[in-house]
Length: 481
Image (cartoon, rainbow, N blue to C red; front, side, top):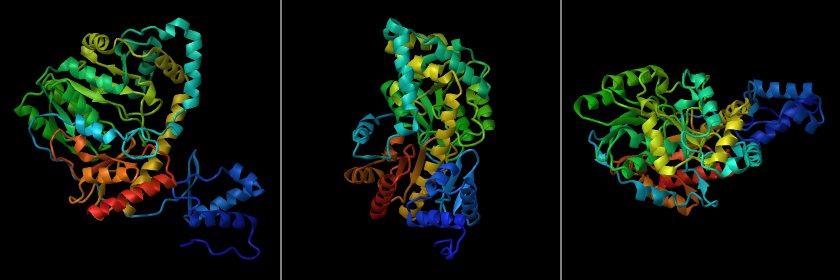
């Protein structure tokens, strides 16, 4: 319903501007969550004064049509809708098992590179949200400045300037780590892989959260390790009481988890839980492989401190990269392996020799000023808005009984549908309709786990194409329910 009555014949100028904007909102030209023109832009477009535009925006805000966000602008207010419930705590079987998900993952992700497919499956950030031009300029500049050095091997531990910049950023979360504490890698995936190699041997068991990122499962599979899945809360992550009960009964070589905005749950472990986890593992002299890939994509007032911040004995191997915030194709990551530093450095050389030189230098240059922080602030706002829009669309279009997570960071939503909805069938039918999703079974080593779950990516700007894809996906799910 239109919250404004038709403008009177002799409406004031600001009322006329407000009425035109409201008409565009009611017609759907301006959608919920969409940013309105700046005050100056609208004054030029409407040929009115800045004060007239401000009055128009104040009127629309008083009517609940728009909202003002500090240091961001004016936005169309989102429709108030009862959001779906959250999924329950996961309850995987308490047995270690071999992993065999790679074939299924390959089948699911063959369609990811097809530009005709709406990419709701891959956990990626759209290029238009990344500082592509700035990074390209830095890369070209580095190529000219470095000359032959730009094509030479950058032997482990990797680019000194990049490691210095990472160490400088670590100070923000209380990490007293120098540049020599870091080794650069080919993305966070290699950092995790090297960490597993450093702390485990073939046949060992690794305790992981459940559901778990399929890339983690693939690394465990490729190294001949076993996965022991631990129950996890949709908001707070791995359940420490369950982990402690497991560690009291059986031997594990290490714990591997994503404390900040895990993939696929989006859970964020509270700081007190992180401290307890580090203490729990220190008592048993067990290493923790901490994947902090999404740590910079927080929606709250401050960045969650990694478990590494509470590690005084070097047992935490902290992994990260710039793939989710700057440039996925650059494949620049890092690991701070603590007491395993020498072992990981040797393994890095044996595995891939070196991390590409020019991308490291370009990212190091980008990090030298506050441009990265400005970019992150904008990216976090966009991610939070896109996640809200995706969740609202799920509430509108998916079958009754659907549950959705409520992350406070990252870019992913974990969706639980009625049990009659088979995720693999939905994935196949969605692909036929030109939509990709990530079906739940690829996030567990246990067959048939999460068979009625899917993971959806919110890393693309909200558009009519995305909205239509979610509506189609919901229709397909309803037909299966």
